[in-house]
Length: 594
Image (tube, helix red, strand yellow):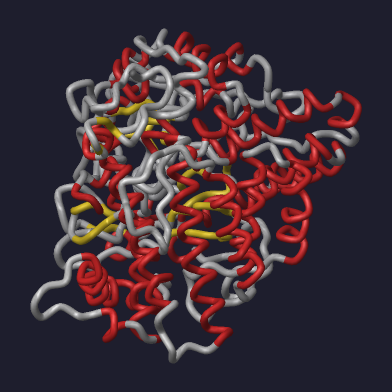
C-alpha cells in the first residue's frame, strides 16, 4: 500500500507539537515557551498538527474536543449524507438515537452531535491560528517559506470555517490576533473565508514537497467553491477555468478523472490525478487505536450474520438514492424528473435463504460502486447476501455502504482492527476533480455557456460509460479470490447527453441535469444536504424523500423539513451557555430554534 512520508511526519509531530500548542494557551512548569518553538521547526510542527486535525481525531478512538468519532466525522456522513437523503442512519432505532432527530429535522440545540462537531472544528481553527501566531515571531524562515506556511495555514483555516459556515451559518470569527475569545456570532464569515482562500491561491506554490499538503490549485478550487456557495458565479467561473485547464496535484499530476471510478476509494491507487484535496488516512499506525484510519466512519460497515466486519451496520444507502441510478433503456440517460417511477428491484422483506433475482433493467454502473445490494459482488468479499447483513432491514433498508469499505485482498494493510469497529486507510476527498467539473458546470449554466456545462457533465458521465470502470461478476461465485470475469455484474447502460441537449432545452433543464449528476456521482460522500440548501430546494426535495422513503423504511417517517429553519443546524446549547457575559449569552441561536 502506498502511504506518503507526510503521514508518518504527521503522527510524530502531532504528538510532539500539540503539547506545545497547549503550552501556548496554559503555561506550566516544564512546558515549552513561545521563544523556544518560534522557529522554522516549531512552526512547521504546529502546521503539521493543523493538518493532522483534518480527521478530527486526537489519538486512539478519541475525537478532538472529547466527542465520539462519528459525531465529528470529516465525511459529514450524518450532517451531509443521512440528512440529505443519500442514506438511512442504519443499524436499528435504539443505536445512536441522537442521529434520528437530525435525519428527521426535529432535533434541538442539546443534541450531542452538534456540540461535538462544534468543539472539534474550533480546536482545528485554534491550531491554524497558533501556526500564524508563531510564524509572525519566527526569524529563521525565508520569505518564500513564510508565504508557503502562511498560505497552508490560511487554507486550512478557510476549510475549517467553511465547514462551520455551512453547518451553522453564523459563528464567531477567531483569528491569530484575537485575545478576547468570547466573541459574538454576528460576523459575515464569507469575506473572511474568501480572504484566507484567496491568499492561499495567490501565494501557495503549484507543487509541494510532501503529499497531502495544499497547493495553489487546491486553494483555487476551494476559493471557487466558496464563490459558488454565495452564488457569485461570475467570480467562480474563471477560477474553475484555470483549475480545470492548468491545475495539478501537489505532486505535479495534471488534474483529470481517474480512468476507473473506484480508484477514488482504493488506498493503493490514491493520491491520483483526481485528488484535489484529500484527508490522508492511514491504518495500523497508532498503537492506541485507529485514530488516523477514518475513525469517524467506523460504524459504517455491513453487520450481521456472516459479515466479515466487526461492526456496526450504519449508513445504509437509501432506496430513493438507489432509484436515482436507473437509466432509460433507449437513451442511457437518467429519469431526472421522475426516477422513483422506475424503481430498482429490492429484497425488502426477503430472507437471506429465500431466492432473489437482482434487477434486470438498465442501470448506471456507478450504483454498484456506491451501494451493496443483494446478488451483486461486494468488492471481493463475496456476493452481497441482503437481509443477513442488515441489522434491521425494516428500519434502515436493504442496502449497504461501499465507498468507505476496504477490499478483502488488502484487508491486512487497508483495514485497521485496533478497536471494536473497523478503521480504514481509504482517504476522504474533500474536493475531487469530478466535483470540480460539476461545480464548474453549475457556473457555466448560471452565467456562461450551456454547451460548456454539458461538456463538463458529459466528461463525468463518459468516465462512468467506459466499461473498464464497471463492476463484473466473479469467475466463481463461491470463490471470490478467483477474480472477476468479463461479464458485467448488472445490465449497465449509460450514455452522455446528446449534442446540444442543454442548449436546446434551456437553463432550467441544464441545472436539473447538473444537480442530478452531482447526486449520483458524489453519492454517500457527504455533500447532498449542503447542496440542497445552497440550491434553495431542500424543502421540496427532502419532504418528497421522506414521503417516498417512508413507505419502505421506518427511520424517516417523522421527517419534515421547514425552509428558513432547517437550512442550518442549531447552535449547540452548551456553547450558548458557556458564552454568558454580564448576565446574557453572547452567542445567539439560529432562527426557529429558540
